Image (cartoon, rainbow, N blue to C red; front, side, top):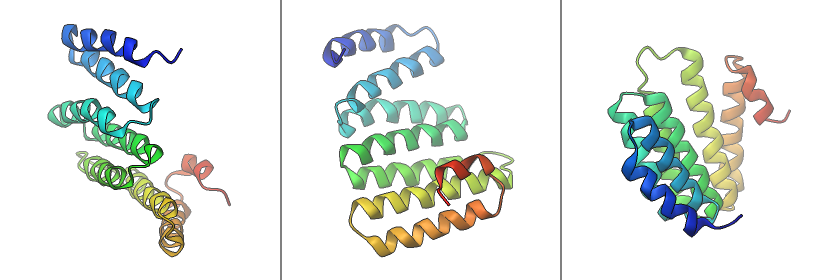
Length: 155
């Protein structure tokens, strides 16, 4: 309905009254997404960064990385490429901290990082850099450890 300011009043109450960390996380994410729909990276970051920190504190490095990447996508779509790059790097680094990280999961984080750098370079008009990172992303996919990601990369 596009009534983001009104929704945020309710999200703020949900954040304050959340009985569990999962409930608080859900409310923080909803608040962040209300700003994402308005292409407001800076305000979305205030809430997603809290959720990122909650996941780090719980040693849930995979989901911390997922949240960081989600925020990076909000920022890249908002035109804030520097903040997007920071959060993509943060997500990559967090994901790689997962205990007992298997090679296919490491490849997934490496693929995401190269793919993100390619998108950022393209948005910045740096064609050669975009092509370099695209080739690196494809090389990771060609290893075959993450066939589901093949749909992200046209042949």
